[in-house]
Amino acid sequence: VWDTFMVSHGGEDWTVMAERLGNGVAPVDEHLWAESDPLIWARESYSVVETQVYADVEDGGYVGQLYYDRNRHTAERRLQMAGVRLAALLNHLFDSAP
Image 1: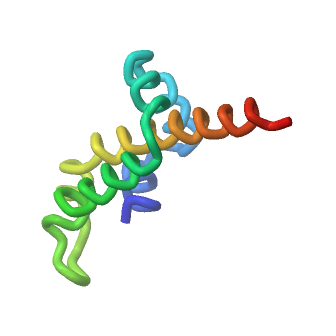
Image 2: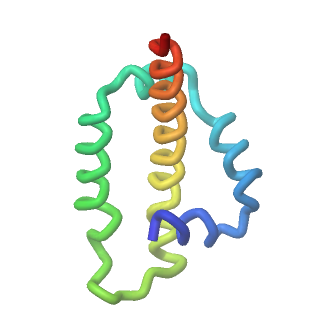
Image 3: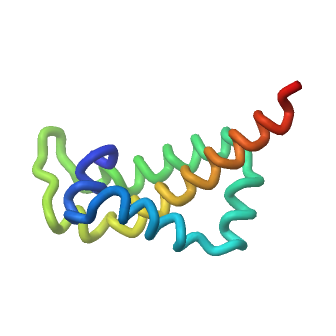
């Protein structure tokens, strides 16, 4: 659901969305997210899944506009976090390379 629906349902071109989300990251958030541990990322994601992603969806249930409206902000925030964290991880790997 969050891999496709939350991105495509709003109708925004993905390149425009990527630019908007990238430009919307505050420097303080970027620093906090980049410095954290991948184990923390996994725990955060698990918590979001338990409390939000599937909290109100029955097996085989319908996911529509109400679900989108309720979860859009969190999905976009998680995309921002993922982008910052991936960039930090890649920078670390390339900085450490011989």
